[in-house]
Amino acid sequence: PFISVFLQRSEAMNHRKKLHIGMSLSPTWLAGDAWRRDDSKIEDIYGSDFHLDIAKRSEQAKLDFVFRPDTLFLDSQILESGPGFSSLDPTILLASIARETGRIGLLSTASTTFFPPYIVARQIQSLNWLSNGRAGWNIVTALDGNQNFGLDAMPSSDERYERAIEFTEIVRQLWQSYPHSALMNHRASGRYADTSKIKSINHSGKYYTVKGPLNVPAYGDTPIPLIQAGASETGRDFAASIADAIFAATPDKDVASELRKDLRRRATSHGRNEDDILVLPGLSLYLASTESEARDLYTETHARQDNVKKLQYIKSLTDLDLSLWPTDRPITAADLPPPPATVRSRTHSNLLRRLIHREEPTVETLLRCPEVIGSAHWQVIGTVDDAIEKIEEWTNAGAMDGFISVPGGSVDSVDIFFEQLMPRLSDNGFFRSEYSGNTFYEHLKE
Image (tube, rainbow, N blue to C red; front, side, top):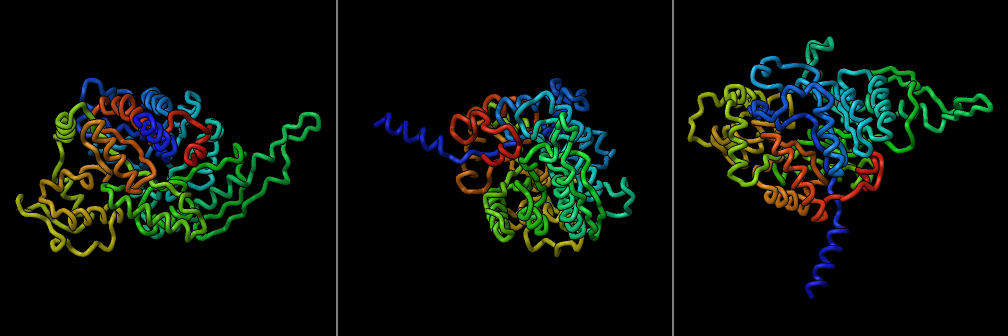
């Protein structure tokens, strides 16, 4: 009987749908005061080797991809107490990693609000060649940075997504305009390419006019994965129509479950299969050998929080001024003003309002929540066992198809993720033990 149960369990684990897991190359484990630790290697964050180490470890763990988020502006005030979002250009950084890795996907970020589509199509396809088919594009509309690109104000959310839809279609057409099959390399006849297969796209739309074709041929026939970041109504419909996966802020299981169900439904309305789009929430991991140590790590990391800035952030998203709020008085739904007509991020505004509706927190509690203190990511503060339990719970609830790991607090959290958490997920049947494909797209479709 014991052997029978063991075999049944092993068979179930082998047939369990595998999670898709990525790793952020943004050094979230150096956020807050974590960069001040002796082992942080903060001096190395603008070099390739710092990121290459994480990418190689991610490949050894058989992760689907590494991911470099990006912003196109600098909040210099943040630099007083940490590196913030100052960073290398993501596509150039990933190109430096491509030659030193062989299987892991390389997901770059490019904005549809600021860049010309021809440049993005060329950069991503170039990365695809340099990595032998491992490039992916994280499509963002951006929330800030307009003054660096000659714009007095950011376009509205609706206009940004309208641009993104047209922009993405142009990029996809450009990738098809010079197909791999056009390459002949026929030395005897002297024919390098079959030019009948290379077509101009002659796009003329509301925002862009692009003739084409692209001056880089497609690497092969395998598609370049498209990942979209955002979970507003417009963002969801955009993602459901074109994305292979969505990277969204989902701080709790119910938010994630609702998002996944909605995206799958929308995908079918666009003539796609519901499994064509994956939901990959960010998972903020503060890991230690005991829960108490993990809590201490989290507290130490955020010891110098600027509560004034966080209160301003809450007000900007909700119009709720908590600067003089009594410390022991709960914040309820009745206290919330009507949603602002314009807001920096409708997704984060909705998540924050939802949190207040659900939990009625005090100001002190609210200021510690991921909706305020971070990017509203799903968060686990505890041991590897705690993380395994939560990952299994979310998986069984149909709340996700995987996640993007964003370790926090220290280099130790990164080490525990690679050395303990990932082997456990593989042993439990939640994750692959070996790659079965060679391209980013193949990893996402296993």
